[in-house]
Image 1 (tube, helix red, strand yellow):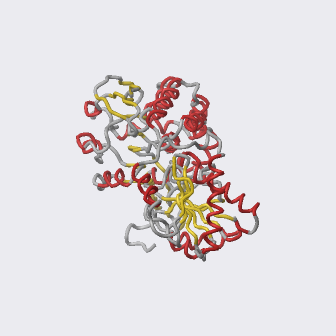
Image 2 (cartoon, rainbow, N blue to C red; image 1 turned 45 degrees about the vertical axis):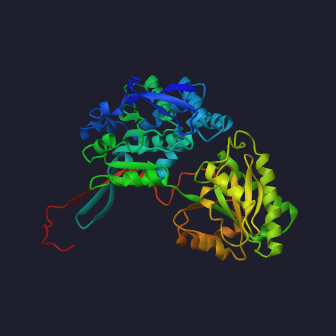
Length: 480
């Protein structure tokens, strides 16, 4: 069994004592890491004014730092290469997918991307100074976006989660403690170590700490998650992880959750107008299901197809399902591969369908992936378990049935054809859906935009208001 060291980084200081040993979530590796409880006095930024050195930088200085960092974040970097090797053992992604993901990790820090993110989602003038927002009758109001002392509880389903979290932290001039996940404990450290090698005394380097501890360890979290230590908790991950941190929320701590979501697709009747159009829809759907082995929240797990659920409709749905399954087998290895194994609960459900009464049809259903075709306009009861490139096709008569199925857990919806998007988007948003995209592009996030119905980077800032009144206006006694 492979063994790795996972150091602790506290603002440029690297600590490598092997105090505690852990096993990865998938059981393929073990790693040792320092006992974080011994460093709880050093981990938080106790003096809030110590963040002032970040404010000696202007936004162009920050962008210049990130642009220097970006080209260093490839698999030529020995720190990132070690993170990749551990992820191969511990991640749900295959080696080919991980290799491609790590090799482009630097793209999240490139100047054009980081600047666009800050400009669109926050507003660079608010990050760089006080912005006058109203001046009227002797009254002047100004606003500035300040960074915060934050803990980022990152998810390990993709190394990209760590990169996007750090980029957001850097552009907001925040102080970050990154709590790494058990299935990806080294990526954040690799980025921090690269920053230390590149610019050990830079303020951004000095405001990043990276640690691993077992989630839920109250001896650490009850001490660390206090308003005297942190102002923001940014939590990615599953329902249990998010529910756990809720108990630490109190006045002075703002919780920003990027919690578990389910993504779906909607394929209109137009997809069945000809064999070539259906083939196009099938390829696009296969990408949205199979990319990154369905490990991310943007992957489709349920596809509503406008075929109707009569016998003729089920035949159409099955034809599309076969095409989707075949296209998943042809996806390039850097994007999608057969699973190492089908998860226990899902495997049991798929096996049970072989003996179930009714017309539920299964195409594949093994490590290659699968398509489960519902017999009516309802997803199968185990749709929340779908993973490893297994998707549920749900035949509907009307697209209104697909709209009614959306809720606050629905994140991304791939839509085919595009002409349906303006017809569906408002109603879907009323029901809780948060992102609409051309079918086939669900996993491609190239635009700086909201996530999970919020703007995380904006929420990470503290928005401070200043009000000034001319001296000739009497306080309180003067009407507005």
